[in-house]
Length: 411
View 1 (cartoon, rainbow, N blue to C red):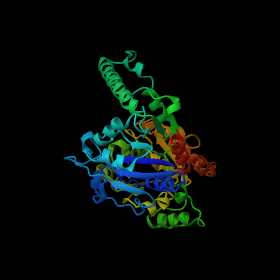
View 2: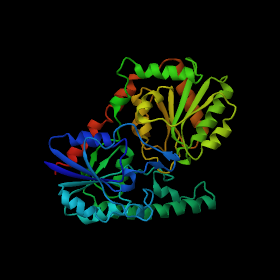
View 3: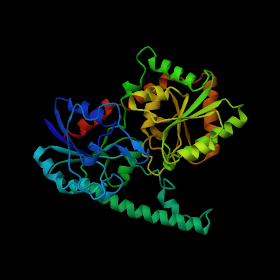
View 4: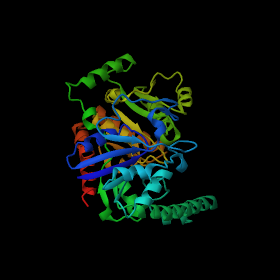
């Protein structure tokens, strides 16, 4: 029997279901230690600007403990925002055979990594990538070819920062025995920071695929069709959807501008739905004011999301980063049988957005417009096989994730 202690900040809708599934495995006993104890009762999301309480269970089916966080300013944005003086002793009392840590960049988490290294095997799960650097070949950043002095200085600074960060992260990951990588870009990141192939185990970023697939006599599709009619969308309209936080990282403005351009050429038949909230909401609404092709909808809860994705024909995630390490909304859209178009700064692009989906160059509106037009043309010709989407997403499942964890627990 493997006894697994999981250290993570707070309950998350994408993790809780597979924690419960893993807890049912006959050869695994697990306990989750949540280190942001304030999140047990406080559900305020600063970016959304409101309390977020999901309508799916996050604390059922597995053992857990909220460890007191004594940080002066409790948060998950800064290293000192998570400080748990009793964490190590509480883990020792549980007496695990393995420890799985989500994220090293918190005081309590890093302290546990250092303390237990060499005593108990340390597993690590994170989803970082190298996508936010200017060039995949970092040494090319210092090339002066075709650059102004200003560009050269900026590139050199980026290179120096990269080298410092690489050295720091290589030290951090020296405390890790095995890492669970979520996809291709994440695997490259771990290898780049000193971990060996033999230390890496595929445990994909996944969602509850079955919850998004329409098994019930197309019930989701029917509800979405009714909703479309209620908000003024005709059956023949092509609809693009953005769902999430209206923030600079997600770059929703470029999508709005792209739809404006397309509709100037296509007689106003492309509809765009913005669903969510965030700091850019007022600016987006002001820019779209008076345009009937742009529709804003409020944030929806988890049980409604399978219907939300079916409002559209194309789901777009135009993120510019930094830090768009995966993009689980893409998993959800594909499981809902929708085409996707995403920027090359989204971590999952290389794994999930191959043809007939599209990847566009981040912040390149011409490329985004071109890729959107290609997808729209394919949709109009009914040349997209939607069954391919769900077949592709089958690999990115909780079952595959759990198998990866179990393989990492074998030694």
